[in-house]
Image 1 (cartoon, rainbow, N blue to C red):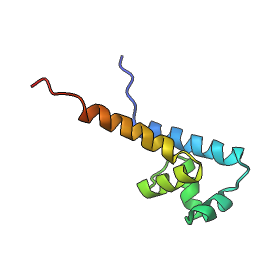
Image 2: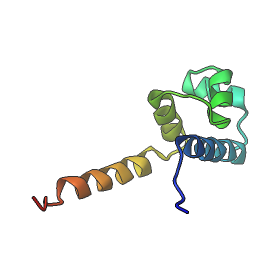
Image 3: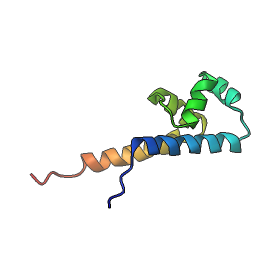
Image 4: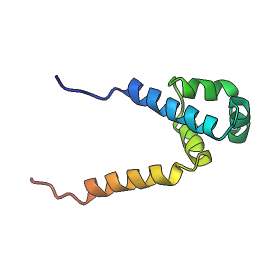
Length: 88
């Protein structure tokens, strides 16, 4: 009936994106983990869509040059909420 986005689905997609970008750059999980000052297990879990912290995901986005794009999307969403007048 209605397609709803589940958190686990977003986490899986995010993990797959990060894995694809890491591989595209020819970086191993160990190298990537060292560049972020996290463990290889953290990278492995992230790529499998398992639990990760906001700080970890922001470090990854910065390392993959996606942090600015992510921030822009957040800013746009925030501005839409702030600038929308209430009907009440």
